[in-house]
Length: 114
Length: 114
Image (cartoon, chains in turn purple, brown):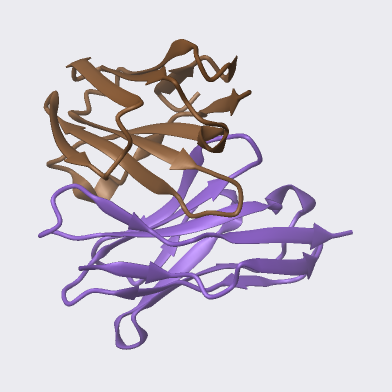
């Protein structure tokens, strides 16, 4: 069975600083990988996804993520964080042999200091 | 607007009440999901419907009763709930033959049981 780990429950960064949120997955074949963002009291919005091709994917709001098969990781990055990026971020993994189910990580809450 | 609409956005109900949550999508998706999101807990998958058939019931108590009359609509009927059922209930949809697109989420219904 696939699993997703987001090691950091909370992260605080200063506005303008760079950001990296970690995501590690466990799965034998090439997974489908996603990052979602959730603002307080809202649903989850898709930031970006990887399923094949270039391992560095660009998303909305200036985010990018890199798929590293050797490390089973799909870390989310942003070069300069804005106060509006404060939210909860979820990594998710899907697989060809898992039907259409996604497995979500526990989430990372990002706080941005002025 | 994500394409998945959930109503109501907020609901307060007593433990003896009966109420229903509604989810609607016109994205042409054939899979729909109910998730529960409680404070400081991971996303909990509750139910999955594929082509109107329930394919997953994640050991959810019978006081939660899902209904999927067609591929565009999903309901969650609630009765005799407990205070610990207070949470954000999220609906999502997806296209089973396009797994790489991930899920589209609604904005959720914030449920408070008093």
